[in-house]
Image 1 (cartoon, helix red, strand yellow):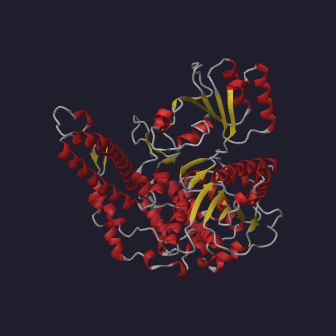
Image 2: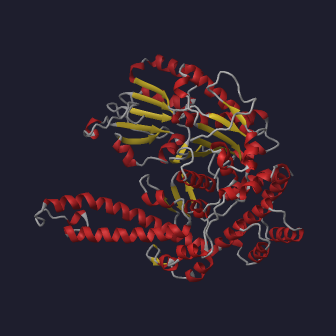
Image 3: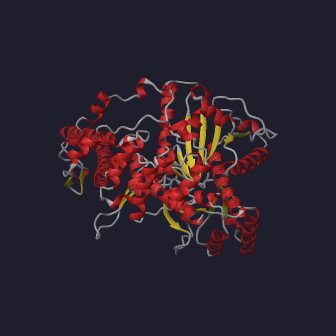
Length: 625
């Protein structure tokens, strides 16, 4: 699209010389789509000299072509018509985030014909890009409060149908981007079934319209559509994974980390995750202590490389280069080539050191490790005593954390009446928002919780030597962690207070190798030979759609088969914990080379934090009163 919808051919020549310089016009939706994957320099390398919001006042550039990337609505079309009428730009390349409906297209054509400047419009494209991508295997539709809308008994049928249409349109766009037509599996009787039915029809129409179903045949691609209610507990969990912690403790939206200020006169700190952020790519799926250890190792490697470059060239910055002083031009070339790369590495490491330092402060002040530990060992009755002591520790800044852990315990186990009474008395006394708990209590009565037991425990067939962590391995992982955390800096200040006692409490906190409910379902559909009988029994009952088939085949159960590629989509909100758990399964499965290489793309209506989901459940609790 940024190259005027022409394929980019890199034949080794200077692409920059062949660029057409252009202006890019966006609206709020398309800005979100673009900003999660591209930075200003990326736009510049594609010939975009300026980008503006379609609503802003823009100077006329009558000699420059313009690319519009906007939502297909009447307001945006009127803005484009106004620009066309005023000869704002030389040529118009118009791209819509999703399909422009027939009525709007005809209205657009009529207005263009009226002003007589159709010759300026060079392209009109439906791009089918109405979703947010933050990683190659992760996307969301950025639709908020979907869970509360779909589970509210007061929601009207028309409202639910509109939501289902939006969701099916977004998934349809993602599928078209992948250039493959998947078979669809979905759980029965909920929003996922409604969306699957709508999506099946869209894909069938698409196959018929392209008149080439053979080109889409891909028996190894499956779309697994799931309702959020298959697992509520994971939405409240505290995680030890770096990416999950950043999202939970701070704010992680569209690859930007926002850390609230601790002081009244300080502003919120924002850190952009660069698409080329090597540290994030390698460490976002690792436990927090591993990320701390690795940032220290990367910093040592950087210092060694910088010292080596200085030794060879005698310069430590590009400004220090004096061509007259260096007789060997290879030294200049080496410095010019290496210094920008070293500076980039340093900026990435500095950012992550600040983020890790801030995480450490939050972890220490809120004792987040204690909640994680209780949730990991939720079956152990001793944890109930430990939880009561945490409730009474006087730290009211963690009221939501306490409530989340209690909800997890409530969902995953049958708690003694005395324990329930003591906990809920505490929350009432401290004015906790208990609407969410009221809703969860009703949900537990309705939802089949056999899925939780099935998935939160590891069957013997899943356990491998590499998946088990013994005490020696734990000690090795945490060895020297205290000194590494001491070295983290934030604004030049060393974090030296209370770290020693904190590390003592972290030494036994490694995430168990547990598969979440969603991962067990995916395994059962993609690789039945590895799944438990309980999982297979559950997924055998899932509906089956084949959009390439001319007849509806979802009425009879399909034969079990292996799939190499899948899109897993959760209706009602997803989280980074499920995403990372799925990617861990992919890595483990591919390592064992079971029936080809697996790939799982995780998508949801939105990536929701635990506190955001608490608010949605509170709304549902209030609606039912």
